[in-house]
Amino acid sequence: MTIPIAYPVEEASAAAGVSRTRIFDAIRKNELTARKAGRATIIEAGELQRWVRSLPTRQCDSTAA
Image 1: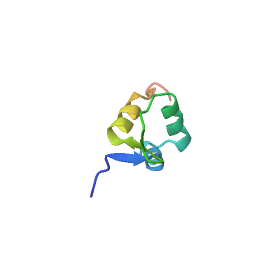
Image 2: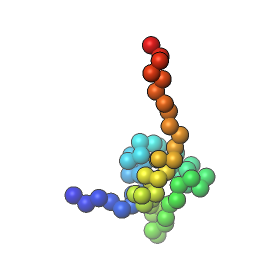
Image 3: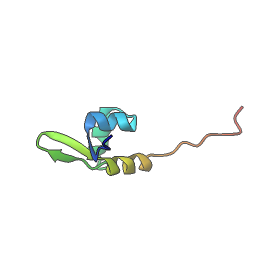
């Protein structure tokens, strides 16, 4: 099995669990760096992981019943 080094936007959105719109929004806001290969927009795997790790966390409230 080959591990991809870059994803097209569709695959990046599926891998990150977000919509294509959210990916393009992050690119537009310079939160996520994309590269162009001809007409294709691709996102490096490491960059996608960095972006996901930069998203806010949501803590579980263990005192809630």
